[in-house]
Image (cartoon, rainbow, N blue to C red; front, side, top):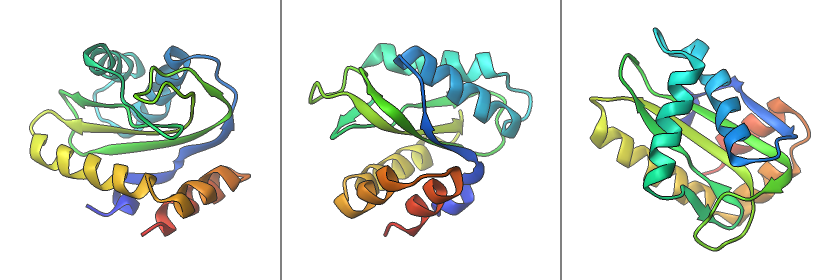
Length: 150
């Protein structure tokens, strides 16, 4: 699935000042809920928190890809956030995280979910892509930086 169909410009935030993983997940809930029919910010937060309890989604190199399934969602929704200051995220390399790409999918789209996560992880492991994301100075630049990555 094309990232441009998952990620909308209004779901990107550049240089956000959050101080913890919990605050970041709450922000993701607030950004995602309006795009998910019949789903509250709290429902999104709970879904992400449930997944984090299974193991951190911090994939290393300052990147986290929190994800969750949402019961009443009709389509997948992505959120991209760059942080003003890196936060502890229990990442696999024990390094703090400053790029967060979140993915929320309908419960029945398990196979598509895995494929999309793999594609995003591959894209975010590209050093040119992460450099462009970290250099972005506005929400729109952040959005364009990720969409332009191959």
